[in-house]
Image (cartoon, rainbow, N blue to C red; front, top):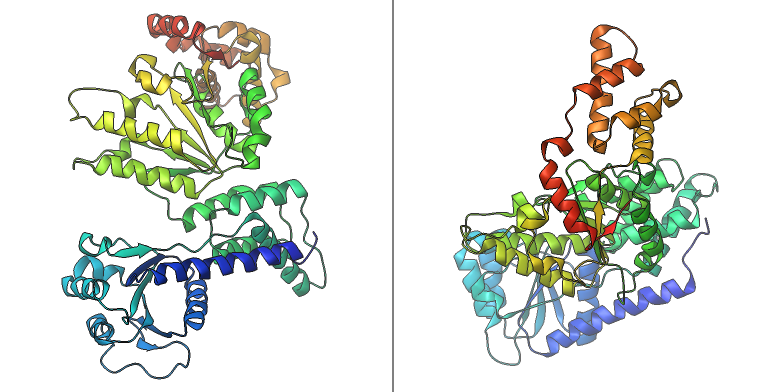
Length: 507
């Protein structure tokens, strides 16, 4: 792996730092008295603010609950009476001179201390040209309504791809120096995937994850990507209505779906390039239960080497008015922070089914989702799965919402053979020892999930009988199974009839 940052990457870093300083100065030039900065990277925030203070010739004072208020540039003791937030805010309010006051981690007080909120508001609305500016810095800042309208929010720029590549190379060079010059092993494809998956992180977090990738064995391989994505998910604190799916199936583990596989392969490069113009948006997979839609959704992430997030519509709903829509907006915003990624909306009809008994919640959820799908500016590929087409609102099916709607039918004879082979191999059974053609013929109308369950049942029965899994036992398990295509024959026929002229066959 080539070590050290390129000259162009260094200039990119310098340019971004200068842009942050310039943009923050523009905010201060507008005489805003209250600035809110959300960031985990306190050191970088302080470096930027210090540069701004030098450019403006302003004093820079810093407060924390552990050290009180003190000068940043010369150090020195804490200002007397500022060990509490109230005392520090009263000091800022009384200061008639311009300057920057940086307060760290005041977010707990914003919820529980009305006096602190009032003092912040009084600093923010103070009139006169020569007044200090209060900068609140925390990993999460939810300003109360009474001060929110007076505040300017400022976000430090995230590292570009060049910077991320530079960070990975710097960590590789550091590891090499500690290990007698041994070079870190990787390949260009994996390195680019690592850079893509570090997008959305701060400089400090990206460096932490890059270091953890390398330090274990001095290599960056495809096997490291799932752990990288999981660590990123945890750093961004996305848990809740979004779940991280660590076990993303390989397309080799998905029987059939030839058309879907080809369609995705043709669009992988366009999506990974990150160009927003004509970037693939997503697909809707329609089909009977157990036909392999969920497995296909997982396989998309596995094929593209991207993190897979699962949106749980059941977890969205809240009894308080407006909370459900807010939960969805937050979940979609968090998915954008994980981009590039695959967002899996499983059984989407259960979350969007329209009805008159929910107070209009489903309609508002639908509106929020459609707006996001039309306006999103990040690399989030949506894979939605549905079992019952009648429950889906027509607005969602309109052309342009998804790039394509695929119908995942029950597997045909050839695909059923392939599915048997996959599940037998997965359980360390030799497919050559079985008559797969006979098994495939016996399972007409079976879904992939029902075939898998028959193999699992054969394993349990063989263990109980203290015998090996052989052809007769598998046939016995299959004969005991009544497939869903028989139990719900009318519903499946109606679904197939609807999909014939309206969707593309996935197989």
